[in-house]
Length: 118
Image 1 (cartoon, one colour):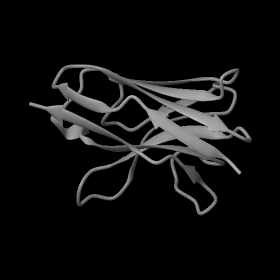
Image 2 (image 1 turned 90 degrees about the vertical axis):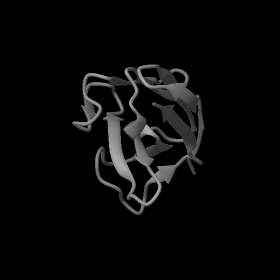
Image 3 (image 1 turned 90 degrees about the horizontal axis):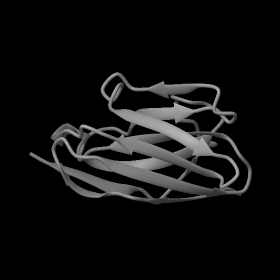
């Protein structure tokens, strides 16, 4: 069983920065961040392979967000810069076999709210 605990969300003004953290217990997987805004489907934000050899980003966050992981701490991070109001959502940490697609075998954190004011 894998448990994921997120932290780091909050309220920030447009143009500001936040860093999300996700501490994982159990097996290691490819890790990633998804987000879900009110009335919208959950969408892929960023992902990183188990060895950190590959990182992947949604077009909407490329150049602004950076995903990284520290396998010694079993923790994945999402550094979010130049935040925009449209980045407002609940952000979920995900561990799974894939990077961008959601599967039934995925593990999810509880979610952390990110609110960007204009």
